[in-house]
Length: 553
Image 1 (cartoon, rainbow, N blue to C red):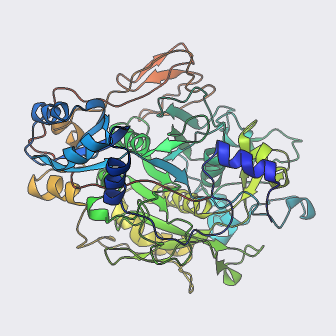
Image 2 (tube, one colour):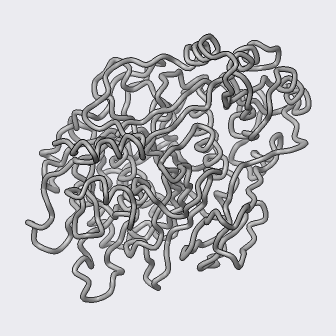
């Protein structure tokens, strides 16, 4: 099925979709893109990510940037470098400067949903009762009934934002379980003006059971972990555009505030558009930075089908994170008839790792619709029961596993990320499809990833410098904690949101600045841009990264 021409044009204008089937062609790598930009438009101003070698001080690194006529716009503790604005020619020259590990262009990040009209199995023909099959397929529904609902676990969703006032994100007391943090500095609107992040969050933690009596949708739709808390890290602007820099800043936020917001799981339904080894890719460095800080990272593997390079894109190509492929449930809640979705990426990474790690339902997935979001305009046929939306992609499969991780951590809070991965990727059947009952009963041992070499910059920090990322001060020892400040009150952050800190203090209808975690009376502050000043890099190295971004819809 295809969209009318006008709708397709609006999609191309508003959101970085790739409507249709898997993208099969190979893509130039990051070095080729930088070289091409320098050759074709040497004087054009670009934003690049510059990373520096171990032992290069902050002062020296800044001097190197200035010598190449660059202006530092952001500091990036998670990857050991800066975002720098300079000419394309100067960016290429900076890459070869002494003390510099790598320079890559800051490119767009897109989502991993496949064209909006993934229809079929309209809910209107089904009897009322639970309409979502995916929680039943993976075994979550039965566990929810036994009290495993994700309660007390925070899941960060790095995406287009979340409509936190959607009824399915309420808690039993009527407040919202969503905390919205605006990371993209150009976003003017709070919430989710697109709809992707809301849909993803609903798969993780949607819960229609808290709707009022008499509501026809009460009890009809539910995510995998219906009582989990959601931290929405909005990396997209109001048209759905997001960059590598936005995502890295969001990942830095996760590490800095994982204790304050009880973040135990991160979902990334995005993919880069540049194949790159995980060993020198900055996005892979950032996700491993989060992983080794004790937070489970779940990432969509992408929608490139069986293309030769399908499994070679960050962050789904990283061997540490849990990368997720998509299954088609074929309209039933029985896992036995599930098939691998044809769009779901599979294959071997450039470093020899088979991906995905596990498969979960990702076709014909119904989840909450962001009110007034673009999705409701772009595909009227996809709207179900007025407040829900049906679509597919590995973007939808990844949050199924993120919700499963929340249930597992509620049941077994002593597990570390490697152990969580060992249990969740031990699926069933020829698809290796997620099976929560099997995961809960399993013995993780030492966990997954044993003997796997970290990303080069992470390795330098963990091994060469003897740093321990589980220590509270790890992110502050060499790189000061990212500072998140409120800015113009015309740029709304979030309303009707609440969050629970380590001491379970609710903050209802408040806005806060992460630099001080101070509640404000206003609901219109924006949290943007990390910074670290006067910091030393003598014992920190986030290096040799190259990546550019791209997910497919």
